[in-house]
Structures are given as structure tokens and as C-alpha cells.
Image 1: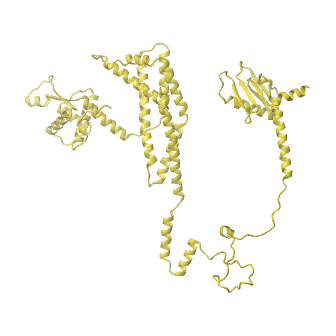
Image 2: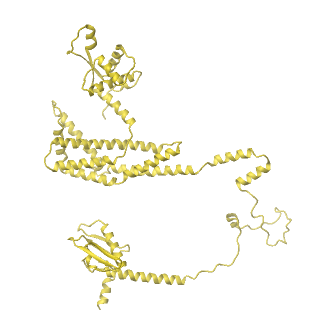
Length: 510
């Protein structure tokens, strides 16, 4: 881990931090116009350009420049090209100030920090498409007619820029997403809208994400087939680096390109066989959708519950406190809690003559109470048992229907059994039920992955019927006629094996 040079960002803190930052901004604006150095008058003019209008005399400006020079952010030189008419003019215009490399880095760091604070991440499918397009373009440039090395360099630079945009936006969006998952807001309406929109945004991004990542991985494989070293050497030639005393600059440039390519592989096609980072992005997005939906459910539930139990009891207490009399308190209590007289008080003893009705309840023997009275509010009634329905006829009807269906199914499989390999056109005419079963087998076979031989194999759910389908060797079309219409399609080569079909043919032949 490289260490940041000491005192690099000292200018950004303290009482005069705004002045220091404005001075560095003024030098950066001058560099944009290819002015490498500024005098005091030129610096004062540039300060007004960048928005500094505070009172500032020469002593304060010189003192600020001295602090920046002590931090090695600004350098001072004597101008030998000017003509001075007076000693005062010499003192004022002789010294020229310019940014050092540290000064440029310090101001760039502050600008980047402010940019990150003001920016918001995004999941952009357009960036994934752009990465795939640049890889396809590199493949065409390396495999097609000879092209300029500059074209290779610019395409590779665009690819790296898109990768940087993907990484930066993804990291920022993931951070904002995690903060959103932890956030809470008193304005449930706005909060609900933001999270609902985020769920829709994530679902749209996940659409065809696997297809896009696979296309990028395939593009990486095609480019690497031409050799990444060859690609980077041509890009180095097209970069037109300035002359240097040694080969360190070129070696550093190639090392940086190799690390960027390794970063691209880490995202979509890791060399060590680990999971690509794009897969982690897919997993994080799906987990965030589930979490956001759970939060939305809680918000919706809180909306449906107008008040809490605590608020209800507090309101009830205020009603009790404002009741005019005891009778009103009793009525309010009964209405609020629903407690009345015991529901079993009307129950009598089996022999009312033994126990007088005037006997006190605490002196009378207990009366059995049915559990149904507590759960349903009523007692059992002993009545006649309901008549049991005779389902023998229904069972016979269902058994007969099942036998008919099995016979129809067996007949259909016997008609579809090919006793070998035939073309689909061999089934010239079929009844509609048999045609539906054939069409189902064809659809399931075409949905499977072909074997090494090119055949597609599929069986029915019970495993008794098997179809082996091969693509037609020609462009012939099969025509099948059914009572409900005519079917046209490719004349596939099929082999259907059904249980018992061979035995049935032998019986018919005998």
C-alpha cells in the first residue's frame, strides 16, 4: 500500500483553507489554458475568475503562497524573460509561482472527493453493452485487415474507461443501497415511493444480466485468443508515449494495462475459476429486492393499523376519566371489554326437583358445562346421525373412466411407436389426442440440451415412453393431418419406444 506524501492535504483544513483551495483552483484554471506560472497580479486576476472576491492584499497573498510552498504544493521561480522599468516593478513581477506535481495531485484529490460526495451510483446496463461492444471491436481489429495501432489504443482505452465506470458506479450504488436498507423515515409516503422505485430499478437491471455477462466473458475469450501481450504491445505503440531516458515508463505502462485486464477478468471471467464479481452483483441485487419488499410490507402493515394498542388504552382512559357517573363507567367497561354475565348460568341440574331453584349457587352441586359452550357459545344438541352417502356408483363410474383413459393412452403410444428410426412425415394422419401427445414429446425434446452425438433424448413423466430426436439432414417439411387441422414443421428424425407396442404388433400380425 503506497503512502500519501505528508502534508499533502494540509491546505484543506484550518482557518485559511478556503483561500488555499482558491489559490490551487486558480493555478489549475491557468493550467487549463496552458499557463504554467503566474505572477501576483496574474494570480489575483485568476482568483476573481474562480469566485474569490474577499479582501486580499499582497502581504496576505504572499504569506498564503509561502505556506503552500512550505507544503511543497507551489514552486517559485525568477522570471528572466521580462523587462522591468522600475525596481518596484522588478520586485512585483520577478517572482513567478506555479503548481508542483504534488500540488496538482492535492487539488485533483479534493476535486475527486467533492465529486464522489455529490455523485450517486447507478447500475447501467448500457455500460455492460458498451464493454461487450468494445471487446467485439478489439476482436475485429485483431482478426481483420491490418489497422493502425492508434485504433487499438483508443478502443482499449474506451474499454478500460467503461470498466472503471462500471466499478465506480456499482460501488457507489451498493453503498447507497445499503444505507437505504438501514434508513428510516417519518414520511412513510415518500419512503414507500423511493423503495418501490428502487425495487423496480433493480428488477429492470437484473433482466438479461446473465446474458450480458456471458457475452462479455465470450468476448474476453475471443480477444485473448489473439494474445493479450500482442494486444498490449500494439496499444503501447499507438499510445505514442513521450520520449524518456529509460524503458521504465513503457514497462510501467504495460504493467498497468495488464492489471486493468486482470480486473476485467475478475469481473466476468476469473482466471482461478472463482465466482465472477458480476455474480456477486446479481446476488446482492436479488437480496436487496427481497429486503426492500419486506420493508415495504412492514410499511404497508403500519399504514393499515391506524393506531396502536397503547394509544387505544390511553384514549379509553380519557373516556373513563370524563364519564359522568358510575353507571356510565359500567356501560363503558362492558362495551370496551365485552364481559357480561356467565353464559352457563342458565344451565339446570338433571333433576330440578332434587335441587330447589332457591338454593344458593355456592351451596348447590356443580353442573357439567360443555366445552363447546366456551369455544362456540352454544351447547351440544344430540340429534340423529346423518345418513352416510353411498359412493359405490361414483367409484364404479370413475374406475370405468380411468380404464377408458388408460386404453386410449395405450392405443396412442402404440400408434406413435416407430419400431426404429423414422422421419416425422411418416405420421401422415393422427387423431387429435395422439397428435397432442406427439407434439408434447417434440416440444420437450427440443427444449433439452443435445448429446455429443447431436441427439436429443426425452422420456415421459412415468419413464415408460422414450423419444430420441435428431435434426433433419435436409430442408424437407413434414405434414401431419388431424381432425382439427394440418400441422407443418421440420421433418425431424425420431425414434419413439413405447411399452407393449411390439407385443401388440405381433398379436395383430398373428
